[in-house]
Length: 206
Image 1 (cartoon, rainbow, N blue to C red):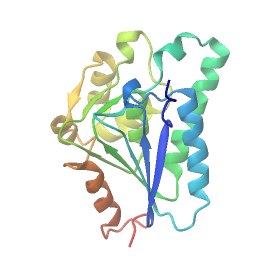
Image 2: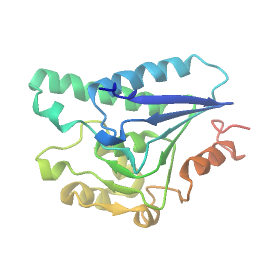
Image 3: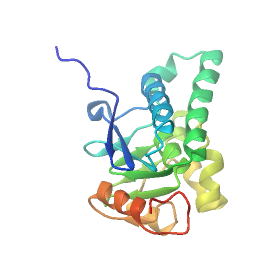
């Protein structure tokens, strides 16, 4: 039996680092293992002075699918708090990074994966991207900062509706409500171009 592929794969492209979630058969879950690997990788990139931007993307038709529901079912109150704080710590590090951070959303972006995208400076999406915070259907709510960041980006009313209904919405609606700034294929190339655009932000690559 072949081994599972690495949870994430990182590729350096000049001053850009591309972090790709790499388990599409499992829908790229943000499991404990994946989050721990992501935290290690972010620490490594933070030490590389030549890296100016980090792009997050997925594989096949999935950006990422959020927390692993099977893992969640095994958590007690103490481990659930620890897991929540792990995600909060990582996503806050993304939000506070000296690098420009871009979510290149190539497909399904669900739950905690949307929280990760919200922590990024810029979000761009492919034409087939799909978004949702499905926790309400499971009797849970995200603990990774999405409840704070989503209202700031799209407004309180829209955010409450999306959290309460758990409905899915597509790239055109994401663009309309201001969740993403561009819809374009191939989305990774779009993200790379964004990172290299001259702009006022000191984070952008000159």
